[in-house]
Length: 174
Image (cartoon, rainbow, N blue to C red; front, side, top):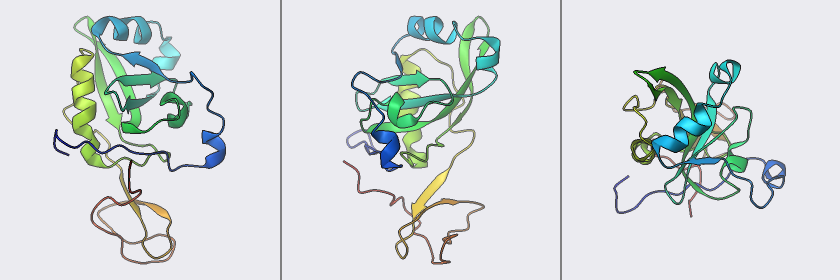
């Protein structure tokens, strides 16, 4: 996406999960290196062994939550610019991103959401991978309406065998 128009992704996952989000729910915002040090630095070795849930909110802030958190809860129920899973490692005395994906079946963000995530990571002072280490391609079948994960560049619906669009189409956005 260009800097002029960033795609906002609405939650497209199960309604019952979205209904569980309470006012004030949201992941912890990482707006500076101090925020990252305070939150990531307080995680246990066991927590750091798994990736965390992340979103980049409409405000551009990176928000983090425990891995088993729902993205919609991390986002406080709102639309996001990016969502997925992220892992950190201590390098040269600082936290750095070592793995990151756009894997969020609640928001199904396109791979081009990387640019907004990269900006949020830069603002938080996090060195990063320069792209998703595991990029997930989501497409909605125009015939049966099911959301698919495209694997090995095979744009065929796993539910009805229809051809899937080459451009992101999971939701009209907000």
